[in-house]
Image (cartoon, rainbow, N blue to C red; front, side, top):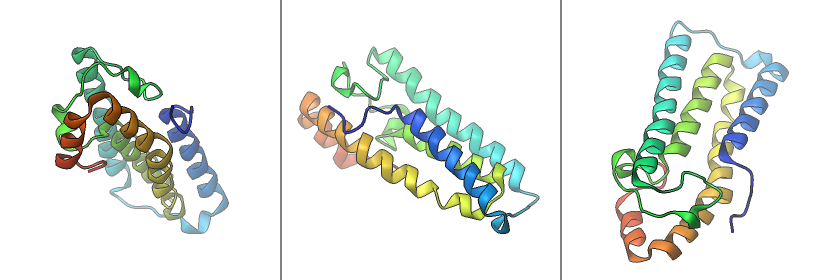
Length: 151
């Protein structure tokens, strides 16, 4: 059983809302740059790719993409973006939040980016890792030794 039953996209949206509130409460940390919008677009597209491509690979492998039920995983997916990160979908959510921070144009809102990573690691990834280790044993342990948790 996971330590939380809050779906990671909901956590991402909550952090995004906190980033927006921070931008409103601390306007003195606003910034404006010619690169702000192009970077936001680049980050948004990259984040969406990190979200969608592994999901497609999981579907093709016939395994669950439900982050609240890692014990239901039928196959260990180690190809595609999962060769570089054990959690590319969470990396994608982090990059989407970075895109949102660029849209907001507020340095203080960026301080919440690590909060997302810390929360997801503690309450989602670590419990998922325990479930996957129990399900796939040595294969998962070897995968963890080769591939980083984030990037």
